Length: 576
Ligand code: C2O
Image (cartoon, rainbow, N blue to C red; front, side, top):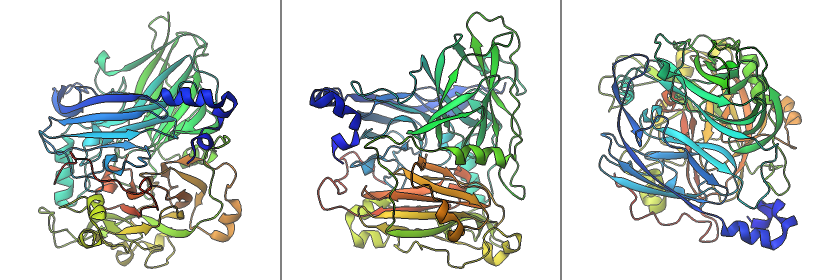
């Protein structure tokens, strides 16, 4: 895209400002030493986790729009490793995206790999995480993209301070072993022992160590930009601060129309930027920030931790009185979650991409649970019965083992043919009453394992209806697309009905996202332009479901020029 088109607010300042801002594009360079960290949580004996630079969460990457980010990954851990830059478009750098076996083979223990990419045409809060096994439980951090220097600043009142708030999950267990056991036995992994805020569970767990509560120091009347990230593996969360409310100004690094609320709903993979004014006047000056689970499964899904993570927002000079706890929504409060998710709209800025008004490719894709037979490499799987599985359009996705999908794509059709097939369907194999209890039978639940992609021509516009099913359970699946943002045209409950939904499409200011929490027992309609050649994973951002096959891959073909084609792989690309 033409620079002046993409950054229209530079125009009033003329060419001088444009050149100045281009000149200021910087290289933001980090070394990520991934290795063992000994840490004690929840008053348990110290345990060894995998972490970046000995930190939990890992380091925050701070960049400005247009900067180049260079991260040297040094794998000192005993596990294969990759890092994904969640929400970064990776235009022209598909080899840096990071999902294991989709865009690269893992970095082996003792190995290293340098990720290089630009953060162009996107501003706000993104994050990074391991994209292999369940290791992102402890290998994650924030990626903050501020407006470029010399450009117009935020399209909202300037905050006095910015705070990153990363919500996570913690297991009193080795998460790599958990994933191996779940996979080998084809049984669901146990739920987390705690939720965390900036790595710490807070005061409401059975442990009184003051070190385990994160504190935010604020001054009266400060306007604070909270950059909230849900890095939890499997749990959407409600987020509140006692006696405070928020103005949401961004989500998934796309600006939103200011939206006032006292509760944020955030699914794994999503980010929310919210302004909070420190204007509370209740005595004491100490308030809990809290994150509690939103469990959308109907009927009841697997058990989850019914606990609340807390941090403390402490006003300068306040006495150390006990903080106030905000009343949290009920665990199954779908109405509150849906209100938040569906009320967001984009802040339309001149020159920013707008929703495509028509689509070249129409897909209707069921997302949900099912059952499968044991796979050959699930060595501890009971072969006399079927097991919990998940799928998109009844195709349960399996990663290839010998070569990454992007390498196979780059090598050409002969190699690709042995690694994946181009038959991901545009509709489910059977049309049925997707959300009816009566549909939940063994025949409908059955799904086979495969590695299917949907091939797109460069620049095709895709419309996808994501339809959740009642098979096993309805549940709000956070569907994440790599390589693109998409626009959310509409969402609702029950079976998608074009006759009633299409007239309600928001074609004016639909929210732009990289992860959509498809309503439980409902649907969402998204559109995106396939302007980025490469292999792009689309999957449920619950790791428990990703592992079971709730995924597919878009293969986007090259455009007409070198700039619109997949470049050769970097020399240090890891080998399998
Ligand atoms: Cu944040 Cu494929 O993931």
